[in-house]
Length: 73
Image 1: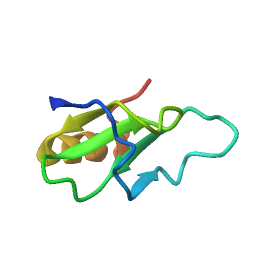
Image 2 (image 1 turned 60 degrees about the horizontal axis):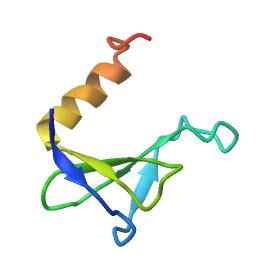
Image 3 (image 1 turned 90 degrees about the vertical axis):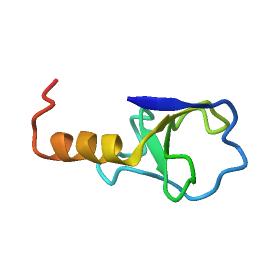
Image 4 (image 1 turned 60 degrees about the vertical axis):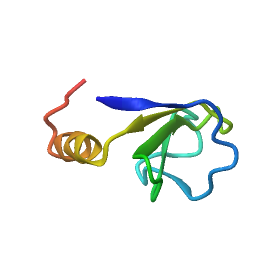
């Protein structure tokens, strides 16, 4: 699960969002690579935070399951 949260992410750079996201929906998550404490994930509509912080193995498992279609809505 999550390792915690980062209350303010405005100083972090290198955020990215899914290539499946488009500019019209506005409901995207962004991920920041290379953070020393884990994988920060935030709502793209709130660029100053907060962000949830996930451990890399858990985040990797989540993304793998999502890509494989095992997390159907």
